[in-house]
Image (cartoon, rainbow, N blue to C red):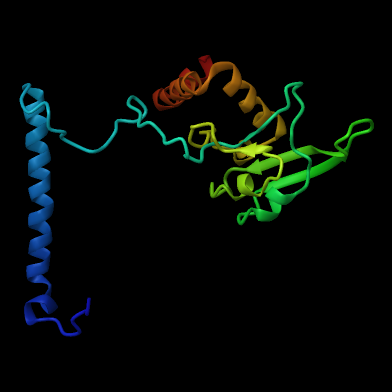
Length: 199
């Protein structure tokens, strides 16, 4: 498609274009307002009034491919699968993964992460760490969006224990119960910090 280089006089003064925008905006406003009023009296129930979801009371189901919170996978005996190869940290464009390796004394795997931390304030949730891992030690398949922490930046650094506990919770509760638990926590945050402390 070839773009016109010259604008007409009416297009250059923008009056007509602004008027078109106002008509479209207010037309949609009136349409949605009318539909909401119709829903209040019980009419036009089959027609949706707005596309928004009243989060956290309502939920939109996430796709199975959704890149949610990170977790470290575990062997059946509870050991972390990570071999501290640093490929996830190397692939990370945000440089938000910090690993300190340690060595096993008597096991076939010679290294494991002594410290494994993800700074979620830096993370862009691209999933490169998951793709780079050769042993499927890190995943982002929890189906939950990033955690909401109190306003202390140190709390957004998720360590190895937090990431391992997510796998245990996912296996014990299942994805639906884990999502419901997460939604209750977010609803408590909406009501205020005092409710969150009681739970």
